[in-house]
Amino acid sequence: MKDHAAQVGRGRVALGIGAAAALAVAAAGHAAAERRDARTQVTIWRAGGSGYGGGGAFVSHRREVEVAADGVVRFVGVAAGLDPATVEVTSVTDPSGTSVLEQRFAANLATPEALLARHVGRPITVVLSRGEVRGTLRAVTLDALVIETAGKGVEIVRRGEHVVALELGAAAVEHEPTLVWKLAARRPGRHTLEVRYRAAGLGWTPEYTAVLGAGDAVDLTAWAAVRNDAGLELTAAELTLVSDPAGRTPRAPAPGRPAPIPLARPVDVPAGATVQVELAPRRTAVTGRRLVMFEALADQTASFPQQDCHGFTAQAAGVRSQHVLELDGPGRVLPEGTVRLLRRDDRGALTALGEDTLRVDGVTGALRLRIGAAPELVGERRQLDCREDPGRRAVRERIEVKVENRGKVAADVVVREYLYRWHNWRIDQEDEPGKRAGASAHEWRLRLPAGATRTLSYTVVYAW
Image (cartoon, rainbow, N blue to C red):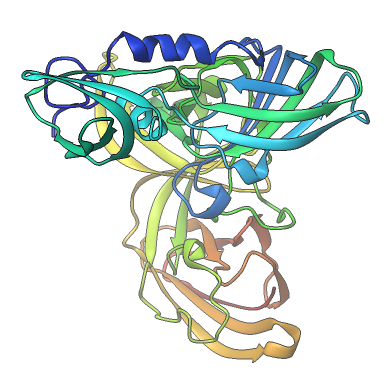
């Protein structure tokens, strides 16, 4: 099938002059909101997870409109992926005296297929290479048009090269996604409306670049890549970025979860574009501290809830020992994300080392860059006990983690455990004091001499 945005049949012209006239007629007779927003605010969830944390946004427009006596208002220029059930309309001018009686959401109807579907039951003229067929359009498919004619009853016109043009009569058509309301207004006339809704198609991801120099010095840049596939032009929009490591937004914020990040200035994000904005100021020559990070279990929080004792207990899965450089945070807790590692030599030339995940202490904001494997540090994780309490909607689990330094020198070690069963958890008992290090992470810092072994055990209680 050829591009129907350019032609309706497979002929030369998609729509005749009648369709253009229909668009002009549709704009008359109703109060329409001026397109320019006085203020647009957008809260955008991080892309890449599930639920509200997997992208999407909450959009707020403030705009002046003229409410006529019939109360009909067309609010043009909303997101194509908005959820009509989430739309909230408030008159700032007269909140108690204005209410919504009816609402209709018209997505982009300016395409030929949408125009035809909307024109069913209305007059149509099909210009064919052999002549014309006039009548009332009764049905539309990708292959044919069903037209009720005065002389022949019903004629089925196959869509193909023989279709030269289609001429439609006047019909109410929205060029862009539009909300149409019938308002009950105690005071007709000029109103300032606040319009809020949930929309799909917007998302963002954190992106970092770290350049390693001499003496463990690091240059770090932090960007937020904002993607706009919502069919909405964002001009001078006030953006707030929300990140959830678990890929979802819980009912109550968990300790260690990165706070929402309001961007310092309004941003233009054209429809269909990706715009990078500064997530934190660029930092140069930050001195890193060398550590070894031991993770006995890969982060499983993306697949929670795991509310039974057999959800994931394998010892070796995800075991990783890595040499890391730890940097002080920039003053706010940044979200974990992809970091591109490069090294600068004495002449200033850069060599790409690869990509990894920037690890972040969710409480202190410290950043961890993994710079290589640490095979000299080995260990294991065991589940010592686990008890389910369905009545209290809880799981109580006891875990043992053993680490051994087989190297020839002492090492500063961070043992990082992921509490992956649910985002509501607490450490009930631990034989060595650790600390929360994120929404789903707990850590212990150890000084481990060469040849030494250390065993940590703790009890965690999950509740939901």
